[in-house]
Figure 1 (cartoon, rainbow, N blue to C red):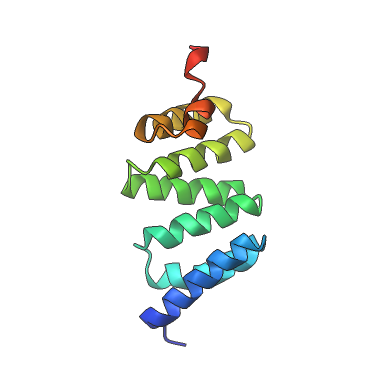
Figure 2 (cartoon, one colour):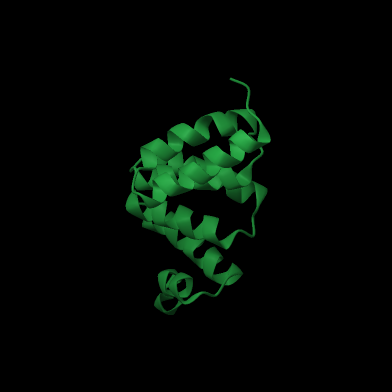
Length: 120
């Protein structure tokens, strides 16, 4: 089946709905062909990273979040989500760095709280 821009948008939106409905593996299945066709699509990669995280595929989530950060180093959410992924994997030292980057890029209260600046 050939992909059209409309197909891509429909699949992306459906993947968002699946993630909201707590079906992250279903979301990944919809996003895989979209990302294969358009590997440069950072929004789809970020959504797939979130789906990997929510399905406890932490290494896959980590790799996707890192790719997003390589492309968008100022993406505070990607840093925060990568930090949560690393934290969940028991890598708190690495996580702290990304929590702090997220808070520096966007001083949202939840980012600042997770950064724990007062502990140093």
